[in-house]
Length: 174
Image (tube, rainbow, N blue to C red; front, side, top):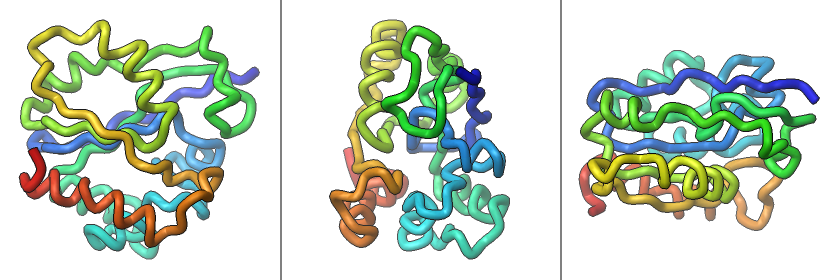
């Protein structure tokens, strides 16, 4: 199995919201872009919510999210995984990103949204027990996965649920 390495976070110093995935897909790794699979709904949803849609360049999309106070990262720094499916991640091989350092560098973040179940499960099992009590102010919420593998909801349904990210970035959710 090939070792996969995730990306650095997309995050401005004044980020207020963090969206967490698990590990970039094969398509994302090839493009060196978060949510690079053409059928992943993340960028279409960001287009509907913030005007950061897939028709823009990746750099433009990143700038828009950062200007809105949104950070994007993954729970995993490294893992072994054949293909792109979260279910194929070799859990014995995972290395977690440095969340204590990240939250210390981004003290305005108070909301963490998980892009699907694997990100939430691994974070709660491997990150939360290691985080200092000084980060107890963080609020967590799982959102429906934007992956094309999660087909239980269409784009409009996912976007309606993901609208909480826009409210949180605007300080309208506590």
